[in-house]
Length: 117
Image 1 (cartoon, rainbow, N blue to C red):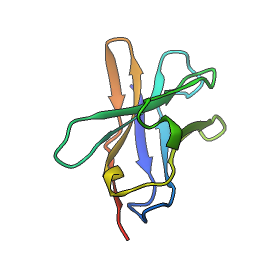
Image 2: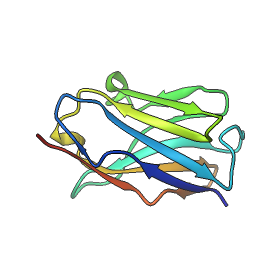
Image 3: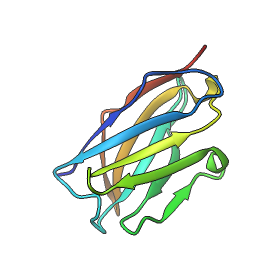
């Protein structure tokens, strides 16, 4: 079973860059088995898929966020990161990292990020 843990600042000011890290335990980011994914849930709304990085460093992003989003990985630390630039209060959400496979997924517990001055 893959275990994931998000970390990063809980408060970001408008126009700054949001940066979160997902640390993987009981699994390897180099495996071909999963898409290493970021998902968020704004208050009172449904889940929004942000994007993923795979074992070969290929990335894919939601079209609505693509211009502001970057996902990268550090194989030496078994981590992957999310950066969202030029944030606004609409980027306030609980952010989750997940390992997605065909038919199932492992999720982190989520971390609240609030965009406010």
